[in-house]
Amino acid sequence: MSEFRVLDLSQGPRHQAFAFYRGASQPRWGLTTRLDVGPLLACVQAWRDELPGLSPLLAYHHAVLQACLAVPALRQRLVRDGHGNGQVLEWARVDASITLARSDDSFAVAYLPWGARLRDFVGPARAAIEAARVPGTDWGIGGPHGGCVYTTTLPWLDFTHFEHAHTGAFDDGTPRFAFGRFSPGGSERVEMAMNLEIHHALVDGLHVGRFVQALEALLAEPEGLW
Image 1 (cartoon, rainbow, N blue to C red):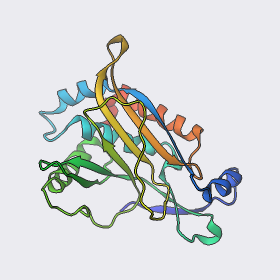
Image 2 (image 1 turned 90 degrees about the vertical axis):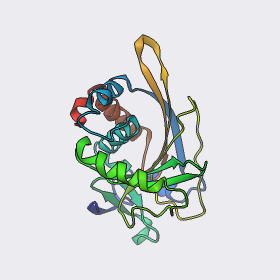
Image 3 (image 1 turned 120 degrees about the horizontal axis):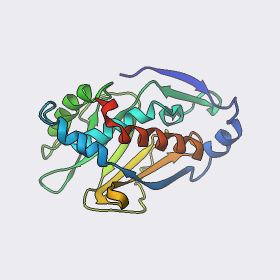
């Protein structure tokens, strides 16, 4: 389980934004952008013999988790009844909780543990996916864990907008991602839509911009993920 530190966001340069959106009736906001995944797909094809089980889905999920390291705000989570409502946990790294299609047309939830390198990530992630895809398996596969991000993939659709479902449970601010199909772009690009929904008490546009820049850099030179 990842380590974390406790922060008090009722103090510091974002204290006004934190206080305002912490109690907002709709504190979530999001956007959809397009990513060039061409270089990543080429590397996945080249690496498959050396790394059995590697897939584009696992490769871009690993890149997303690595990009989260560059932006602390995406690793921060609200705490229910935190001291003065300002208490936040900042995880040293985050894992991925993803949805997957099953053969019986239901869907599964699999928990993919963070790995420092792609070669460390793929084996445990592939095992978790295969276990979760067994029809009737509980969604709780993976057991207790620390910080994560929620993701879903719609490989059938090239979307421009996406809205995420929410339960009535306490919202700790976990980012939600959605990924679309691979589609041809201009200048021989291969593009994928990515939607990101975040909690405004924790994440501003500046943070999302930095995250996307970090992710784009990893996708442009995926050899650094190996």
